[in-house]
Image 1 (cartoon, rainbow, N blue to C red):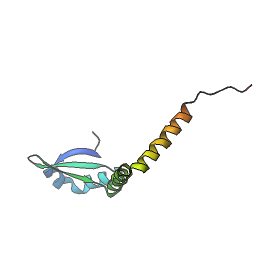
Image 2: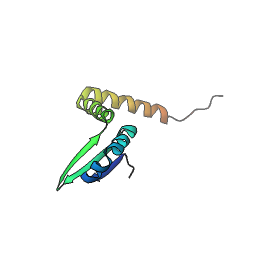
Image 3: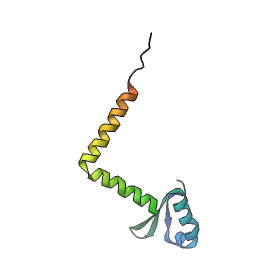
Length: 87
């Protein structure tokens, strides 16, 4: 797994905070930090959080999601049409 999407222990986060946060920011990545027991914390860039929130907002708006699906389907159909020769 790449450094941008990995699980680490809390001691590792403490030891390498600056380096790991730079990885998250540079690669729009995220870290899952095991804080003991069944508890985990996710550290992600603001850019990635904004992207996830935009995606959720689109999915929550039924009519907008349906419109996007129709556009993608129409584009897929236009791309998959066989080429016809002229002449």
